[in-house]
Image (cartoon, rainbow, N blue to C red; front, side, top):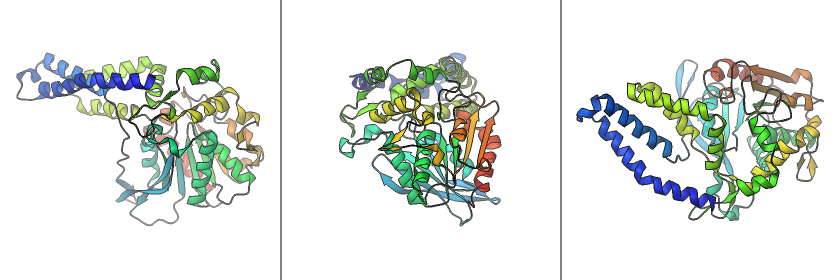
Length: 408
């Protein structure tokens, strides 16, 4: 019912959104005398803001067609390498042969946004690495015959893809996948799997959410699992390909994202309006691009979402040594070969300081020379993997760590 109401609301607003889109074109037309008046610019800006805020955004493109290597522009093409029911591996193939560049698997979050959220991460890595990324599918588009997908399946996917890519791969897990990637490496090490990665970089991930809990952590712990199942889980309605699949829908996730920092989002939209009125197209386009990516959300399967809430945020199974991967216990002490870098942001309001760093303590049998911690000053959660501080401060640390352990 909840999903159907959302679809009905979107359909009902469609005519108003179309009129707003046409109206802003009218009020920006240089042949319209009103376009040169303060009232005309304000009307156009208001219509633009309404249309932009009520539009539904699909899966964005990476649009990373070029990179810069050794002083020259190099063509980049996307290639689908390994397909599975709930995701695929995408490789960014550079039109230049550099066999000594480390292989990097970038594991994107399955937490509402598409893999393109890591566009800036990929862009910074491309000049020096052979980059692969997990490209998760929207659960609303996956038919029921594809089966279930839970946290154990996520770990299976990571292990399988590392085996496909081969030995000496480096893994970067951003936010949510820190837990399943860490668990996958622990299981691979325990089973002496030759494809265990040379290093893993965990960035802003909830390894142990008991350390400096944030508002996100408190929400997950103050309500029983049954509350989440009753209030945020719904069925995908027809005619979507995944109809009748139980999901945690993207529109609810987006509402949660927005409500956590509602004041900041309102101020950004106010600034967006002012930029449009003033004719500051560059600033307005930067805000527009950010929110087009931010509002591009996907559904995730109910079983994955609920298992993650219970395992990661409520029972703290991984740091307690109680996490299970199918019938096997996940033991971080089994990690003895894979180097670990933990990156945290000083102002991260999603994964608090210390939550990611705990991965180093849990891997008690790993040589201290293979452990590194980096706390990025004045950086929030999003800034860990995107933006200027990622490019100028964090990315060099990650690249140096990967190079240091590429010969292991």
